[in-house]
Length: 215
Ligand code: HEM
Image (cartoon, rainbow, N blue to C red):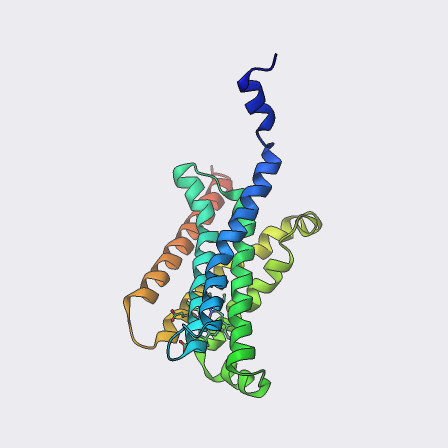
């Protein structure tokens, strides 16, 4: 006769199924802010300047997901909690938010006026930095699948290190958007700076360890 513990064991999803379920849940939760802000937009609840609010909301969520992606490794190193399997999902969420943010700017704000957009990229430093961050995220998103990881080998790791430059550009973009010095962009800038410093420190320590000792 089957014991209740055997039944529980049989019903328990395998690690692969559990991973897929959790990944799907992460996408659902991750997209919730975008769905909510578009809902507010469609129902005229985004205030006096809805396009700007939409851009700002999508922008801040892009930065939050970018930071969450960068926090995965330090979190594992410092606490032992490993979310490495979900890092790719977080990275892709970052890209999808950046794409929505950029599309809002291009289609809704500038109505695809390519001349004005090009002028903006050249003349407004905050747009230049935003574009730089977005341009870096594109190849990272395109190569975020198993086939590309296998195909690129060690070049994949090198390519994905560019995410740190994207984060620096994104943090600078936010600082320059606001023009004055409120607390929030400074806090985001500081978080990105700490994450970059952590990565650099780790890289330097590793290099020192690899260098042969001089007799
Ligand atoms: C990874 C890429 C990017 C990130 C992380 C990002 C992040 C942000 C953040 C945090 C804000 C400010 C939100 C707030 O005020 O609460 C913002 C605003 C904005 N961003 Fe981006 N952004 C990115 C790329 C871009 C690109 C490519 C463009 C356009 C070419 C762009 C255009 C804008 C505009 C127009 C605003 C609103 C400025 C205003 O308040 O008047 N961003 N973005």
